[in-house]
Image 1 (cartoon, rainbow, N blue to C red):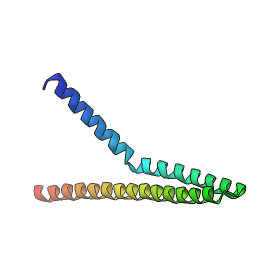
Image 2 (cartoon, rainbow, N blue to C red):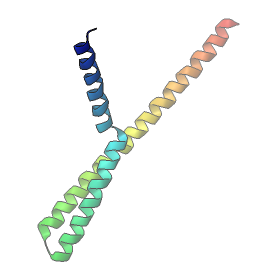
Image 3 (spheres, rainbow, N blue to C red):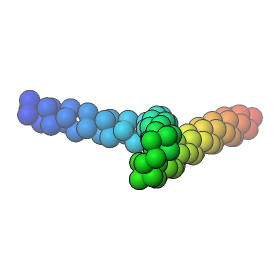
Image 4 (cartoon, rainbow, N blue to C red):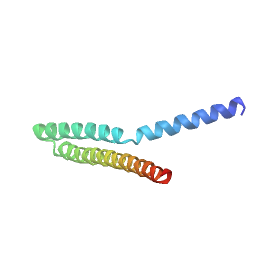
Length: 102
């Protein structure tokens, strides 16, 4: 593998890692929490100053943030279930190996 191929391979791995991080459960939860917070602030400011449009924008943003946060929580639960399932499969494999050895 020449140097250009190595650089291209490293770049591809870095891009893949960045993409996974950007779409991770933690990223979704953080992005959602931030949107919710800003949305709530816009709602309150809009209400105080009588700007109905700002208030509605805040409601929309808060709702989108809640959706993103919940999506992150769901992803996290799915990851947990996958880990438990993988661990269960490993235990079953170990038990089968024990039975075969007897």
